[in-house]
Length: 425
Image (tube, rainbow, N blue to C red; front, top):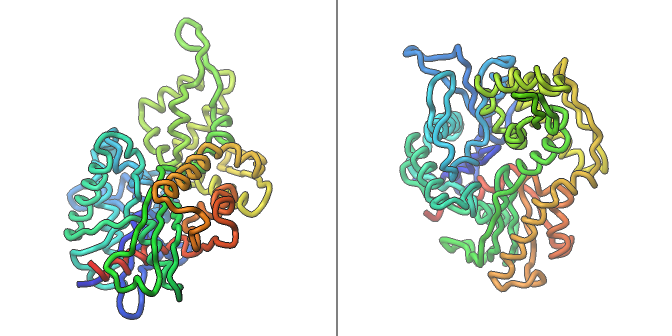
């Protein structure tokens, strides 16, 4: 039985196999080179179909290649994991064909498995799969059970019928443990695209022969990188696309452009859901009745040409720049559309204060529920891209001291840990 671990992420996924020599992770070819992770993205082109006329999808980094080649033709599906616990999302129509969430997940996982087996060989039926402590939208009744059911069904559809789930921060602890020469009580902080997950766990040489490490506690929040991106979209991009603008409605009334449009915009992976005939007709009508038609036309341009991915990349670049600099220039150009603005780190930290407060409260809650004082934690291991954000890092510096902070394996720590965990199941 092979020891296989899968980190199925909101933004990126990774998969690996553990043997006596360590863990080998699959790598994925695309136009720009080779990626260590598999982008959790599906792309459909209306003209690419099988012999029976059914749409054919492509997933991962190759999906981005096809999307860029299509120049606005097609449908990009992103962040599927964030909908797992959401009863409100049952299915979506893609070029007049209805696809359930499980259908979409199955297509993505099938492509990921096929690409991985080209390198790693047959992956069998058993797999250890990472899961967040709390799924996004899990607050709804039965949300966790729904998420697990959907994910389990999707995995079974591609041949993984013997599934063990492990908390993602616990998996990161297995990765961190490899470098230890003595036992430690470690606080794990794992930041993904959709969730931030924390664990207090005892790791080290004396624990390596145990089937499971001694976990003192876990907690998490449905807030992470995507939520921080959303704040930039809302504060920088949305006002230039009509947020706050008014238009003349029936009987000459002045109405504000519907806010729900920009609620979708705040979550960049929801942009594709805005591109319906009903929504396009509404926006075209608003553009004809507003004093700022150029802003609504800019939004229509983004939707018409499926520029959500490009917009996301511009936002991500600004966020990354602000981790290293006090100021950056946000630039998003696709003529005639041209959005530019200066953003300071102080502004950004003000925009994300609600999110960082929620993260900090979760860290404090885990320490309180486990009865562990911050001074008694030996080290803090932070992983995931959001761990580079200075306001996030300060949460841990202030509680544990900067000298205790360790980081690494931002893209592959969880997948590596899951493969190591698979040795004991």
